[in-house]
Length: 121
Image (cartoon, rainbow, N blue to C red; front, top):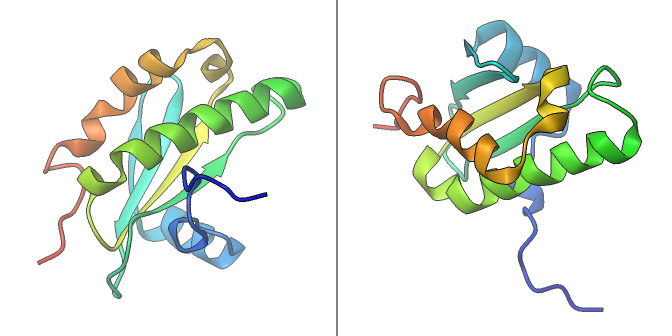
């Protein structure tokens, strides 16, 4: 079956645990009511990448998967605004289970402010 191209590409995802550790150790951390966001500019350019952490504290598997789907969709639609070479890791807090897509957009809109996300030179 052929996909329509609406999913995140493999190069747009943070996949290795070493990359998560580097991002959490060296990245900028921001807290919102329902998320913790880590951002860091990579040395090599390329598309912005997303890493998600949604623990069992958020809810059962169906709830966690829904939160991840909404966060991936937010990132996919706003990836071009975040900037090249940027890594973003989002950790969901338990309250994230009660949010809809538009509430997530409102809460994460600060990611586009220039003082939050480092821009490549």
